[in-house]
Length: 115
Image 1 (tube, rainbow, N blue to C red):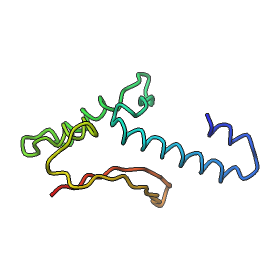
Image 2: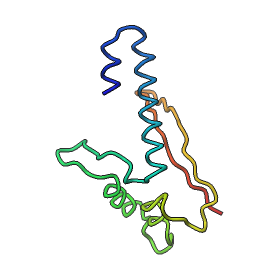
Image 3: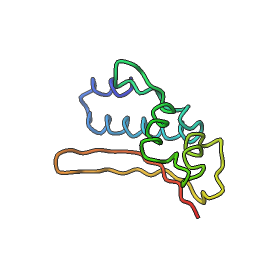
């Protein structure tokens, strides 16, 4: 909603929209750090809304994170931040701006580093 309000004010629209976008990404990152997938909004890209935790279960299985060779990885990621994993040394989020030749994309990503 705040982003839409910025679009109606022509003075420094681009800067205002960028500030609101960054604020929205930061707000989403904080929510994820506090509540994990449960803190994320529903994915409403399709006719049926899907919760982030359900989307992750499908992705984790597709990526092989549920493999016996990766014990506890999928569960740790599914239950983050409520579950500790003995091999995770550090966990952090970072901001990146990608600029492939045809488009520009911004993202906030999470990383968990193990020993």
